[in-house]
Image (cartoon, rainbow, N blue to C red; front, side, top):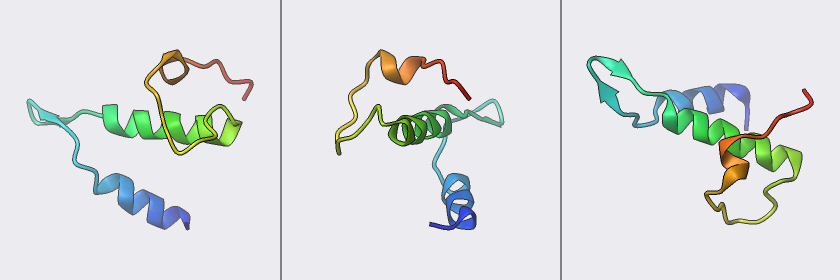
Length: 60
C-alpha cells in the first residue's frame, strides 16, 4: 500500500476520546505490530499479547 493509504487508514481509526483528546493506544499498538512483523518477530497470522508487544529495544 502507498504511504497515503496508510495515513488515511490511521486517521480513520476509531480511537478513544477522553476529555476532548484522542488517545493513541490503538495507533501505538498497530505501529508496534507492524515493526515486529518487519523485524521477523511476528511471522504468523496470529498475534499473541506478550512481552514482545510491550517493549523491544530496536537497533535502529
